[in-house]
Length: 245
Image (cartoon, rainbow, N blue to C red; front, side, top):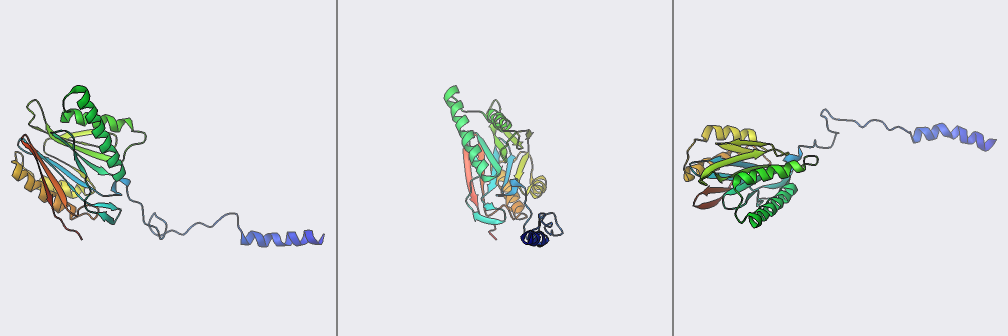
């Protein structure tokens, strides 16, 4: 009896020391818990900025070189634009791992098309292939938004620009296309500086100025850029230095 009474008398004390329900964690004024930074979009995890422009029988596509993990810069030599065939480029923005996976899948399907058809894939067919590949994974999408640029048409000199979202929905335009983290700044600069019918040298100058000025307004992109100018005669690639602070 004495042992039973002692056990009952200790029960309330145990309940106070080890409560079954924990008190709610205090939160700061924002939506994220105190002491923990709010999670940004997964599309901004690594940072990127890509611009594609159409000129007179030519196109240009450029990207920044920064590779980061949120606000921490890990490197400044990341490749985000890939050439597929003689007259097609694809620029990738979003999660870096998905960018590498998609680049390998694009190259594999392009090589299979070349082996089967004995000719290079046109830029229009390549854009449709990218759309099909992204839509196949719509229930578990790749966190990547491609921008396809190249020369197509019957004469092989018509500029072609196409942008897509995660599911492969296409947006085609005949002037310029932007993607990445600082799209608002890039849109404003492109709309103010772009002119139709630019020659390759003028197109390079406009595109370079738009990209360098746009990434200065975003901390997740920048640290230099690379510009590819595609003409019927070939490709010209230039590396540009940017602010690294």
